[in-house]
Amino acid sequence: MLPATIEWKEGRLLLLDQRQLPSRTEYVSCESAEETARAIENMTVRGAPAIGVAAAYGLVLALKGEDFAAAARRLAGTRPTAVNLFWAIRRMEALWRANEDKNKDELYLIMEKEAKNIHDEDIEINKSIGRFGQEILPEKGAAITHCNAGALATAGYGTALGVFRAAAEAGKEIKIYADETRPRLQGSLLTAYELQRDGFDVTVITDSMAAFLMSRVKIDAAVTGADRVAMNGDAANKIGTYSLAIAAKRHGVPFYIAAPLSTFDAGCASGEDIPIEERGGGEVRAVGGVEVVPEEIKVWNPAFDVTPNELITGIITERGIIRAPFAENIKKFFPGRKR
Ligand SMILES: CSC[C@H]1O[C@H](OP(=O)(O)O)[C@H](O)[C@@H]1O
Image (cartoon, rainbow, N blue to C red):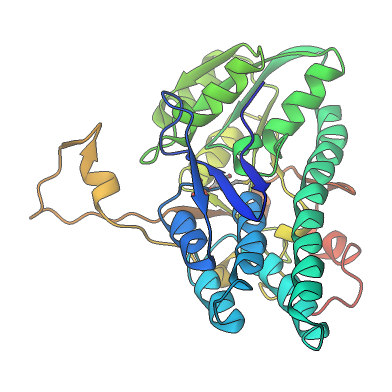
């Protein structure tokens, strides 16, 4: 059984410290929005849906003595790409504004309940994504994934890894190849750990091996998560996803994004509109704590890239699989939605 990614215990937010996995299972306790914001920035908690859930609880913690609007701005300023963060903050802010006239205790209970709703809903949404997604997989075969879009990236069960979990629950035997996912290694440190603990046949490869693997091994599907999906189906996800999609296209491997509808951003017409987080060069400069690129050499470290919709076979959501023509078919899921 995997340790819980996020726990809310007696008014404290406990975050599984994913920087210590897989060697140590430790929790960081957050007692304020500021502490929650730092945990998102330093990737104690990471993964688009997970940081949305964490931010929702962070805004409950803010009620204990922080300026609520300032706390919302602080949390919104932590990481720019995962739209679930902003979706969760907007949802909590709207509730706060609607109940500002309530006394402190009543307001706290209302906000705490909403954060728990966001938490519980995420797990149910992931299971629904899994149910739809497992249909793309054969009774016996192989799939490849990138980064970690599992229970550790969400409130539980996972999006891309939820597809694999649902396939296993349906009795399918799917061998998983996991890209290590340089530079933060979410694949080798988190996905391999998650899948191995759940009894999957998982093999870690370096990101650069994916194309060669597909040229030699039958891969039935590539399935990754997403941090933001534009209205034309372009999808932002961990750096290296775009390269995987190109390799999949070259080798005729169907490429799927698994993401909840809260990851779609009506404010982004295409992938051009998606802000891409750039992180410090230290993540690239050092390998295993050993500096391999000296300071005088420049480093570029975009944490995400954008896969254009023409490389995507389908987007697996909790309400079904969206296929091309994406702009037209995505619109059906958001009748008249404002950003
Ligand atoms: C369930 S999607 C999670 C998504 O978030 C990851 O990014 P990070 O580890 O930097 O938060 C990666 O893009 C995953 O696909």
